[in-house]
Amino acid sequence: MTSIEVRPEVAAALSGGAPVVALESTIISHGMPYPTNVDMANEVEAIVRSNGAVPATIAVLSGVCHIGLDHEQLLTLATSHEVHKATTRDLPWLIAAGRHGATTVAATMRLAALAGIRVFATGGIGGVHRGAATTFDISADLTELAMTPVAVVSAGIKSILDIGLTLERLETLGVPVVVNGSDQFPSFYSRVSGYASPRRLDGASEIAAFLDATWNTLGLTTGVSIANPVPVDDEIAADEIAGVIDDALDDLDRQGVVGQDVTPFLLGRIVEMTGGRSLQANLALVRNNAAVAAQIAVAYAARVHR
Ligand code: PSU
Ligand code: MN
Image 1 (cartoon, rainbow, N blue to C red):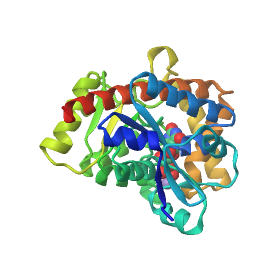
Image 2 (cartoon, rainbow, N blue to C red; image 1 turned 120 degrees about the vertical axis):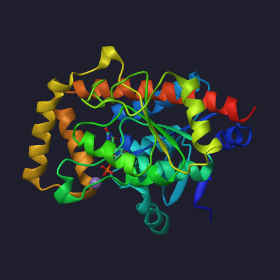
Image 3 (tube, protein in one colour; image 1 turned 180 degrees about the horizontal axis):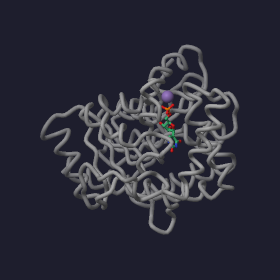
């Protein structure tokens, strides 16, 4: 039995050097409520297609790692209570035990790289949690970014995390960080975070040149973090969302939530507390990231498969 299954359409695109964009599944199973999650997953795939690339949503179903899913498989991820949140270290257990797993940024990067996919779109990446000096809670997304050559397009990171420490950690790990079209590092719902962008580039063709330099000219083996600010019209001001995030963090402490439940708990509380407003911003930024990632995949394929 093979434990990795690449959808025929994705395999054909990869072998022909055509652009492919990986998409994660933790955002579907543990990041958004049903039915918004499945609608988002289908819509994001359509956006990747309309920008000229083939989408490959990644997840583990009954112990098989799938690179590319059909509608029914997406629905299983969106509705089943048997879907485990999975970072890279959880993949061998899912395979051995024959379970379902929704892949985080880290696990999605690893499976994308195994399949030969270089560009990946998501909402927000994990990072250094506030209070990490005592909890040691630092997302394995950063570990994976340090060792797997995939470009991750996100809207930055939510201020549920310590943005300054996350940027420091990425620097130490040698992970290139680029902001698309802004001098400010974005904070997911907001176009600013109070931190400057480590490096700025403008648009897909400059970013494709950057990826080519990273992996092909220099032979670096790291991932790349591409922060793509939420569109102006969909932004929630940083000071407006700050109180909600503080309240969600208080609830986290009170309920004693730890480990891999922390991020899903906080995401869920923020949606509840904003009465869905944060979900609208989340959807808008994911759509925007999918479009930009597809444009980058197209530009990168054109550079390296000439
Ligand atoms: N941040 C978000 N939305 C998300 C996640 C993070 O704004 O859906 C998900 C991603 O799948 C990310 C994971 O890889 O949470 C990080 O979890 P942890 O902090 O447990 O590493
Ligand atoms: Mn964690």
